[in-house]
Length: 213
Image (cartoon, rainbow, N blue to C red; front, side, top):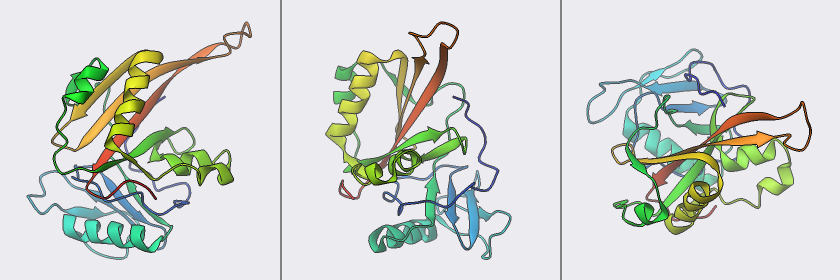
């Protein structure tokens, strides 16, 4: 599954409210409003952060506190059309590598209480929240998936990836407040001539908000 830069505008607005407010922001994260444009976090923005307006944005630069407030408000009000898009990792997953479920248990997540799960959307070629991705195939089923997970459930998902998936790679980037998982899946194993392998990417963004939603 390819991972590309987040320079293009979204193909469609978010179908669900933002899952939660990230514990931390990183350069190249994006914040998008369906009616107002998009902002991307610039590198070297200092402790307050600087979010640069992209093409179509009606406002000027934003700070981390501005984006945090807008995401919190839209999550509480259940406003769709707002989207946080985490920066995708490069070819190598950043942070400390995790090779076993026991390694997950030793991690310290600080004040985090939950994690929002993002997956790569093949159509948009970028990370989207799990409910938005499920809705592409079954909109009704998407409402059965919580916007955020308790940390122990996140650890269970990662442990399952490590135990059951092909070529799993998991890491924890503490400075970004994110966990990453990559693995391979093969389709068409029972159909000669149609077998192909692709890469899956999960990004868990830690949050201080309670799980659920």
